[in-house]
Image (cartoon, rainbow, N blue to C red; front, side):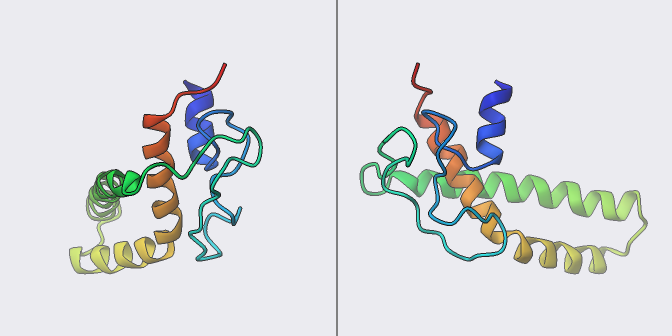
Length: 118
């Protein structure tokens, strides 16, 4: 289980946990969202049927919603930040982390649908 979570965090293939899912290995810097058609390590087909990654939108919504609640709640309750500033800070953090959240949601989705090869 820990290996799977580690592979998801590093945006790796769900079948071998070694090959990168995305053409750009950078998580935050580059805004390149192109996915590899096949895993460069094991050859797993990463380009499923059309519309396969629509489910990742729901994963992205869940991750960003949960993160937003925790971030704003912590800012207000622990650090005593006014709610207006907490929302502004949240917006900045979400803009900066958009690229990683997009890639993470696709990675979580394919890991839910594809198991590790033995």
